[in-house]
Image (cartoon, rainbow, N blue to C red; front, side):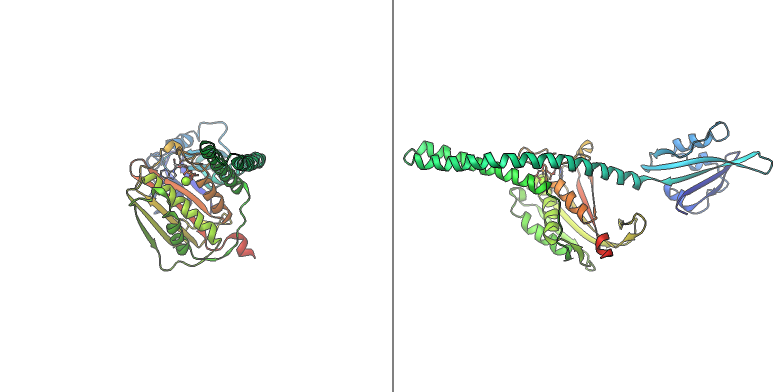
Length: 353
Ligand SMILES: Nc1ncnc2c1ncn2[C@@H]1O[C@H](COP(=O)(O)OP(=O)(O)OP(=O)(O)O)[C@@H](O)[C@H]1O
Ligand SMILES: [Mg+2]
C-alpha cells in the first residue's frame, strides 16, 4: 500500500500502523508500536498528535488536509475518520495519509520553469536589441581608429572602446546561449570521462591556485545517455564555482557512483519506479553557503561575485533538467559545499525510443 495508515483505539493505543506510515514518520518498521500510546510513539510529531487528539471531539474531521512534518520535512496529505462498531459507537479512529513531498517538489520545479521561461524571453529580446548597436559601436570605433593613426592617446582610448564592446558582446552572447532551449546530442557518454575533461577545462580558471582535486569514480559506472559536451560544461561550472569559493586553497573531491535504490538517490522517472542513476558529488571544503541563499543560487543572474554573471548554476540546472536529472546542494557554513548531480543512465525519452 502506498498510503500510510494509522489506526488507534478510543484510549489512544495504536491498533495498526503500516510500514509506509512508519517510513513517513521516520519510525522503525518492526511492529513494536502496536499497543503503545500514539502520543508516545509520535512524540516528535506534535502536529500529528494534535490532529489525532481531536478525533473524538471534532464535529468535522479533517478530510484531504495537508501538513508539514517538521522533524522529517515531509509534506503529507491526510484524512482522519472514525471507526465505528455495529451499533454505530466510535471505537477508534484511523488516519490515512500520503507523502506529498515529491508532488510538491515537482510543482516547485514547474513554477521555476515558468519563471525561467518568462525571464528567458525578456532576456532574449533585450540581448537581441543590444547586439546591433554594440556591433555598430565596434565598427565605428574601428573606422575612427584609422582616421587618427598618429594620435597615440586617441588610439589607446579607441582600443579600450573596442575591447569593452567586445566584452559586452560576449556577455550578451552568453545570455542568448542561456535562454536558447537546450538541445541534447544524446550518445553513450562516460560520466567519468566528462568529469576528467571538466577538471582539465577548469584548470584554466584564475582561482585554480594550489587546490587539490581528487576524482573517485566507481569502476562499475555504465555509460549514460547524455550529451558529452554539455555534461562537461555542468562539471566545469561546478568546479569553477568550487575553486572560486576556495580562493586558491583547499580541496575538491568528485565522486561518481551507480545507484539503483531510491533511498540512495536513484531517480523515479515515472514518479514510481527508480531507474539506474549515476550520482556525482562535487564537494569542496570552502566557506559554504549562507542557508538563506541556497534557494536562490540556481536563479539566473544571482551572484555574490563582483565579476560573476550568475548564469553558471542556472545553465547547470538547465542541462541537468534536459537529461531528466536532478541537482541538489547541501552546505554547512564554514565547512564546505556539496553539489549532487543525479543522472539517469537512460532518460525517459531514450527508454521509449
Ligand atoms: N561551491 C560553492 N561554494 C560557495 N558558494 C557557491 C558555490 N557554488 C556557487 N556558490 C554561490 O552561488 C552563486 C551563483 O553561482 P553561479 O555559478 O550561478 O554564478 P557565479 O559563479 O556567481 O557567476 P558565473 O558562474 O556566471 O561566473 C555564486 O555567486 C556563489 O555565491
Ligand atoms: Mg559560477
